[in-house]
Image 1 (cartoon, one colour):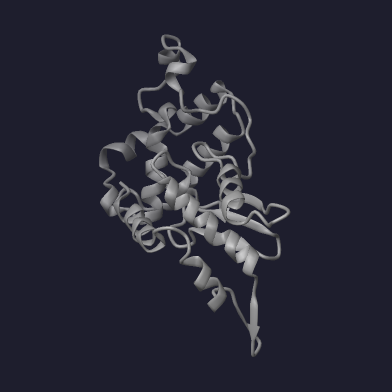
Image 2 (image 1 turned 135 degrees about the horizontal axis):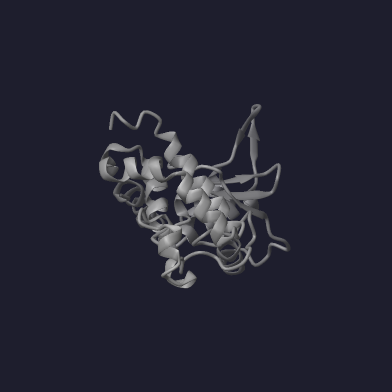
Length: 219
């Protein structure tokens, strides 16, 4: 892996492509982006070994592989022979909510469903966004200041287990409901009340293990 001296470029590239897809970029625009990085992809694909990457970089590489348009052989010449839908059947065909809509997962839908089941007394909904990183440490986060729930980009994937997404949504909505506790000048978010309600989510301990497996086993 000596030729990959700057692994963060993998995440930057994945983030750039994801943003273009979500913004509904034209096929021509995506082709330009793809061909501008042909040398990068051509050098990367034969030598990359996911076991040598950091967990965050593995998710970025996985995201790149999941996008059909990023096949090394995809060129304008090939596009002239193949229909638009055959090439990018996973690409959004219209603009979606840039903040909560992903390429594969829509956070607003997930939060709304969990809120309706577990927190029907909430009269309004939080803002919902994606973090700007493929973080394997900060998986999800609730900001009291912005009233905002954010998910790591590692979950904008075809393979993200629905039960994990629902559990994380429940966890962050629970933060919103329970609130903060201040003791001797220190602020606590995982209070006794929070912990007592967190375990009410079905199979919560099992899902904690599934989250760790999802991160470790992604290739």
